[in-house]
View (tube, each protein chain N blue to C red):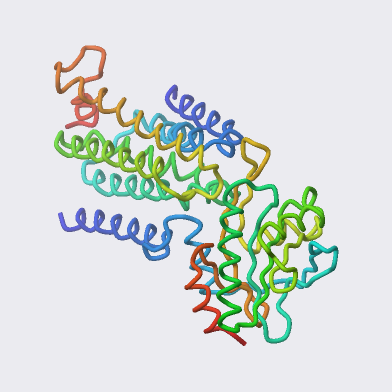
Length: 186
Length: 199
């Protein structure tokens, strides 16, 4: 229940950021969209699914992720139809399925996904800082470059965060990654 | 086991299909490419809008008998991209005249409030637009939004009181349809295209 409320809160925040999303791609792509994903993940926090759902759910989440990474869809997300699809698909087709499939993913697959996320952010960062043209018609070139740097900073931050358990062992304040599996009955 | 594999396969198939569709068969990753593909596939009829040119005369946007119209969207106090685009446009004009293609070039201002005929004339002089083959013109305020929407031109105010917009050369063919988009510096491609569609 508490988690559903939190999810709704994240969703409300994302909706409240509508104006901000129009004015800045950083607030759109790196604040509003992740909040929507978070809303879905948090809403499904205490749910669990049988193991054979894991791969289809992961593929669903990856599809949604790739879909919203495309510059053409970032532009589209600012039209009324695109906005509606964004509000529905990011929580329900990305946040929720990712949360539900995550406990079933082995450490290698998790590492693979994380490594890919980092390299993808790096490529996006390079693309957005170096593109000679506007990638999204709805935003200024200067904003596009800022977004590129934001991608790079985010990649650096995530790399540090994910490296902590690898380098220093699992810190006590982080939940054990096996928790999810026991919760789901593994 | 087979049922489970099938489920994953189905998810991958649907996901791939959605992405394939969203990118127009992995060809359009930005809205600029998407609009170019869309226009080439299904040309859009252009309404009979009348513009006011730099000498205050009323000129039709639509091509007249046997001609093709090239449109560029600009605002005259633009500091960078429009100036480059105008130089490219001049080159296109020269190229078309050399090839004896009957075409009219119009730089349409999307800032009709600031761009008075006098202001447009200054811009025209700076780029040697003669007012006959190549003219600078502004639409009625009430026609502007419709035009920008039809041509899929996004105009957003920048930090310095100007605008940023997708600059390109838009072709209105002999039958009055918006049917192609080119980069402003794609002089060769524009010339070749017009040779082809010349009415």
